[in-house]
Image (cartoon, rainbow over all chains, first blue to last red):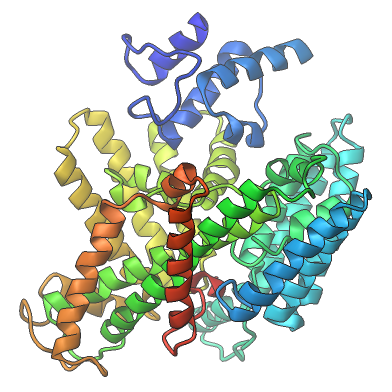
Length: 76
Length: 475
């Protein structure tokens, strides 16, 4: 989660940004489709994984994103 | 057959629901699904029998492609990717042939100075919706996100009557597992009650509210003389409210009908006119289309770039929205509608970089005004008509207020029109939306009385000459 938080802080350009597993796009100010795609790309680079297009749409909160990263890392 | 027709409400839906649960008791899971598939084909054929072969053709071709993509899931190869691209291209070509042929012929004639005959075929029912659903399905098959595929489930997924003509646009994962739930074909009193309630809400929104706003919108848009500022705003606001109540009413009916059959469909609207910026608006308006645009248009566009910069992301936003506008129909008015939203989203992104948020009332007013103006292009048959209304809205044609003799609308009716606008604004900005009401719903005598009351009023309206077909049926 710390690594994910760092990616979020980079993408949102906000070193104070604190996220939890339950954080959703509607709760974090400025989390729109452009930020979301930047987040996805940044996370893909950081964790060396690749999300399917449909998977990006299904993510409802940060916890689900973390679970998907773990699942992909296990498969790799 | 439309959701708000007596044939659908009093015959089709009750027969389909009763038959589904009766077959569900026989212990053969395929039977209720076959029943739903047959009902869906009857529903589509009743809407447009001539287009049925096209729907079936699309199902057959995409189904065969899907089988290949799923069989070769474990193989990573250029051939598989090429097949996906060919499948997507075939779907786009299919859509272009039947929906945009006249537009492209006009464009060619204009550019080349030729006089090729313009095809006059009306485009097939639901083609815009079922085609993009098939594109998403093929991509999901390619990316390994489709499980439990078989021809019966797939055909039902592609042709389910609740969404085949006008959405919500669904993905395989959202519905397929629901049909295979052991309890799927067992009647659930809660789901039937909740589904009926939402269906009635949607019916009321469509036949009472949307069809009433149609009158004011149509009068203003078809008025060929200079309009006053008030006249322009009444026409534009009426259409905004008409479209929202029409399409969200339709969606409520789709969600309600499916829920009676234990199928939960995704939401399409969440009080869009309360949005404080244009990005927020698209998260609340036609949500399943927005999801398609961001996931299957915008994201691949950015992924194809070696390096994503802010400017490139803005360009992708603009292009995606212009395509989304064009998706509605082959007319410059739709392209302009999409491009305007693209520009607005770009401006919003740039403004956000400045980190100087506007006060909420100003942000709301800007967003709402922009949405209303852009919808003028959406509604107009020609660019000339759109500019006529927009000019009047900014006082460039007539005075502030005048008693224009709109076609069939006299002075008293104009005052009534203003009252309807205020009433519509109050509902959209203050009243709980269908999603809130559905969440809060609990079977009670009060809920029953409300549903029966709304249904009764709706039936009176549906039985009158006011009743019209859905706006999105033409897209």
